[in-house]
Image 1 (cartoon, one colour):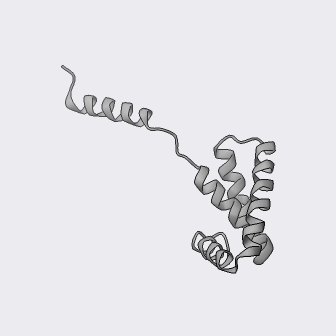
Image 2 (cartoon, one colour):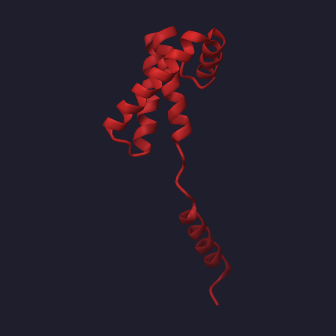
Image 3 (tube, one colour):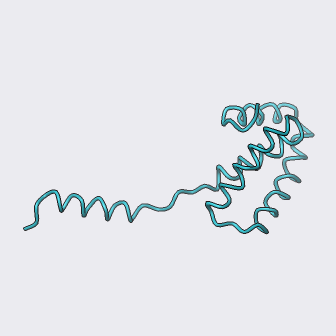
Length: 104
């Protein structure tokens, strides 16, 4: 019978391999929202930080440039309307983006 340490290492390796990959979708969507709000209501540095975060999170999901651009267009259209209609939503979203370090 193999030593206990070998059994534990084997079990841990099997567990690590069985773990699903991280799901970056929610973070990606939020970074897109932060890009839209900071582009319109904050400053260029914040918009750039949000854009960079969204692009990196998109890359981690293996999204193509075409998909990244489509997602950005969708977020801009949808969030732009929400931001224009509700100053409360705008303030809430900017606050969340600040908390995440994506806005100043």
